[in-house]
Each structure stands twice: as structure tokens, then as C-alpha cells.
Image 1 (tube, one colour):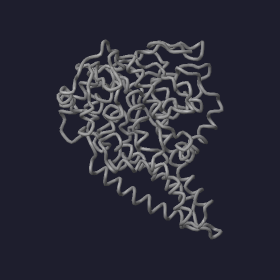
Image 2 (cartoon, helix red, strand yellow):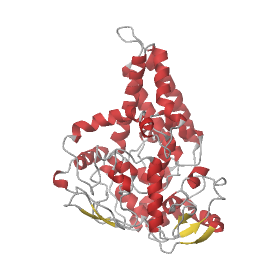
Image 3 (cartoon, one colour):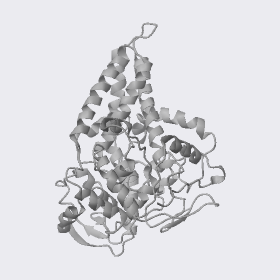
Image 4 (tube, one colour):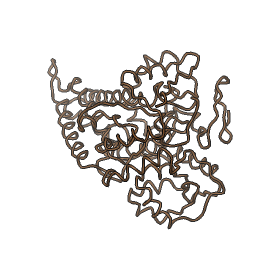
Length: 451
């Protein structure tokens, strides 16, 4: 059915969903396997923003219902040109609020570019000065400088991981099997594990101002450039909403949102197979989806270069390709096994559940889980998702500094009476399995107890 304003009916007649302003599905939501291509999602989001914010035109930017002309600010933006250039004609409120811990300084700087106000403004989230998120952000900023941006310790870990992965890659192609052939599929497993760690480190860096370390991410079959759109701009602020592109890119394969019909029980044998194949298949996705709005990039050749190098080193094209396929399959298997439970279990709210919230911080706490594993900083970086809520609240804080926010977060959760329950990885994994198959389309949401 067509969606009008902020209210819509889901495709199932038995499921009725009322969407808050700005949260109704975008048109490409109904064609998940085909997209959304990055350019398509950005275009549809801009059109939806301009319909929700009368007065916003394609050559302006909207922040909290105020209009700005940032065309003269693109090249001087401290965080990099891309974040300003690519969001022209859009409501950038969530991105502005969450990417600037020193919000007062950002507001003062932006004042010179203000050119007007929207005729009316319906926010997707609120950032009230006395609310949970704004109060926590203020305390994080007051806790000390240097908390945002790339940390030297994380960069050092990135260099060490890159060297370790390169050595493992060479060993993978040189070790001989019982038949005397070069190439070890066993070594492709630790190679894929190390690739996952570099993926996580690159992900840490691409949320920030431009740095060469974000390209650690591109050693996988995924693109840090595209993920800046789909993940940093799409998933992060809109997690588990119908406009979260990560929630529906492959929704016909795996359905998680409670606003949509559940999967068939056969999802359980399909899930691990899908996890493994996603990495190798992702290498050809850019070739199939290339368009004017999402052109091919030089980094799209990376998995093919890796396969060519592996084939050269082990002396067999077939074996070289096989080794790289296993390496990337292991990497995506780990990625999805660890990343899916932090948003898709029965512990996390999704669209379709009752009681949506407007405060941005409260929404992140309701939709996001993390692995509270007590370990040293290097292991925290390798595991990922250990301070996942903090990462969603403040994506420009380096993974090495996220622990500095933990006490402040706990205090503000208590002060604002925002419930949050910490659960184990195994419990989250079980909760994800329950959501994958919901007999009778049951909601299966287990909200945290009030603190």
C-alpha cells in the first residue's frame, strides 16, 4: 500500500503500523533485494525531507528547522568535504547533532550560514537541552578534550593488524598440502578473522574526518565510501526504523523488523549459508548495481586484485580464487554473527513494536545492545561491539576512548530513568534466533525493566 504522511499500513492486513513523522518507508523499501543503491536512498531521503520541511530546497541544508546555505563551507569543513557536499538539500539534524560533541562551538560557527527557517518542521528525533541525549553529550564534552577523532593507539593497532594480515595472507598461499600443492584453506580461516578486525578498525575511522586508516575497511569486499552513506548516514541515526537502509537491503532474504511479516522456518539453515556467501558475492555486487548514482569505484577491484595475487603466489588460479573466497566468507560470517544480535534480538525495539520514543539517545538505548566484555583495550578493538551503544550515540569518538564515556552514560541513564538491561552474547544470539522466526508474526519484544 502507498504511504501518506507519517502513517501507513504494512503489507499484512493483520499488521497496522503508525509511523512518526519522517519514519515512513522510502519507495525503495519495497524493493529490498535490488537496493537501495546509495544514490537512490540519498535521493529518496532528500525528497522525503523536503516534503517534511517546507521551505527546504535542493540547494540548502536544514538543521532543526532552520535553513542554511553551506555551499561556501564545503571545502573548509573540518570533518571533510563529503559530509557537507553529499547532504545538500537534506535535513541533516541527526548528523549535525551526533557528530559534534562540542555542539555549542558548532552552533556558533554555523550561525553565519543561516538564511531562513522552514515553514514548519517535524523532527524525526528530539535533542532537547534538558533531555537524556543532550545532557549526556554536554557532560561528555566537559569531561575533556581529545575524546573525538582518530586515536594514535588505534592507528598503531591498525598498522600491526595490517602487517599481521599480510604475513598470514602470504603464508596461506605458500603452505603446501599433503599433495604438495601450494595454498592452505586452513590458514584462510585466521586470515579471514584478521580481516574482520581490520574491517572493524576501518569502520571506526570512516565515521571521522578523512584519514588513510579508514581504507583498512576496503580490504574486505565492502566499500568505506558506500558505507559512509548506508551505515554512517543511514543506519546509525535511524537504526531499526523503516528508513534504516541496513534493515532492509536484503529484507527478502532475512526479515527482522516487527513491522514486516516474519521469515519462514527455513531461515535457520539458510542463515549461516547466507552469512558465508555474502562476502564473496559482495565483490560482484558493485558490477551488477553500477549506475549514474552509484558508479564503480577503484576500490571495487580490491577482491579481484587479492585473488590475482593469491593465484600468482600459489601457482593456481582456481586455488587462489578459492582461498580468497574462503577468507572473505569467514570474515562476513564473523561480522554477521557478532553484529546481528546487537540490533535484531528480542531485546531490541524495532519499528512495529509499541512505544516509539522521540529522544535520540533513548531511541539508541532501546534499539541497540552491546557485549560487556571486560578485557584490555587491544582486545576490545578486536572484538568490536563492546561499547556499541556509546558508538551509536557518539560515532566520532574513537574506539580507544569509548570507555571514558561509560560512567557518564550509566549516571545519565539513572538520572533520566532510561531503562537498559545488559545481557550476555549467548542470550542475544538466542533472542536473534527467536526474532528470525516469529510464529504468527508475534512481536517478541522483551523491553528492559524500569531502573
